[in-house]
Length: 394
Image (cartoon, rainbow, N blue to C red; front, side, top):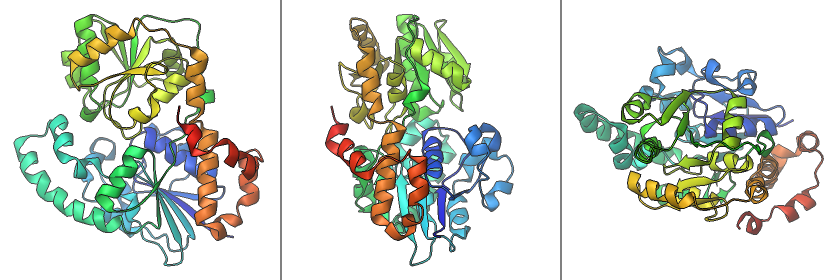
């Protein structure tokens, strides 16, 4: 029986990458789940029950608050993890997990959310992060060391999977590696349209500077449009200072509250450049459209005029005009949900397991019977016919 490990960078927050890691883990019966650190109280119930195996970093002080500050420790922690007994390793990587070590005859497939944003796009990232003078002087020197490690680590996976065409291009540009694209899973069944529509726009996001939530706050403040901001993070205090009376910060909310607000909003505001961006599709699954910045993964998932509209400049004025334009549109709920269904978790499951069976047939062979049970005994032929790449595009 082949032994399989899933390794995720860190479980120190609960965002899209963590959802994908959990989905990968659940798709591989009998797999073990590994990471550098895991902060149990902020994780989903499924991850809390997964018995995540962590590294020595788990014992560092103040992880919940300072996990980002330990960025130079992660390469050491990743390389210290012993996965020599595993035949197939699937890493979920937005930074470090690609650097895990394996046996020569084992297979390592890296699902890459993006090459390290803070290394490869430092100027853009640091501009929004509000670093002080000392940090701006020291960080480039430290990140140069990290970049050299990252290039070495990028040679270790046998195969790369990118979560979007945008990320596939970055993998090719920065690492010189080819990849296939398998978009992240959207749990369409989690969301349902609501006949009750309310007069507010919505942000669902971690509150960190690169997400550009400041654009949504500024635009809705100036237009006096009601905006609900769900999520928390280090940028919250700054955002609250620039927010007018029409803006409400709700912090973290229960899953039920998120689903309800998604289904009743006028639209989701998605003002940052994301590697993929699962939230617009989740809101589409709830029958609501999106106003998104025309960049990154949103270009691949938002169909202009049918599932949302774009704004073109990362400026509040550009978003304000898009909101005004948006308010003259009407939207077809069934079309919105049908679009989201093309990225459903069942589609992800079929694509990923079929790919793993192609690149690691020996390691996956022993799991075939269990996989068929997990996936509801769907036949490979039917899935292949239904899920051809051409049908992912509108």
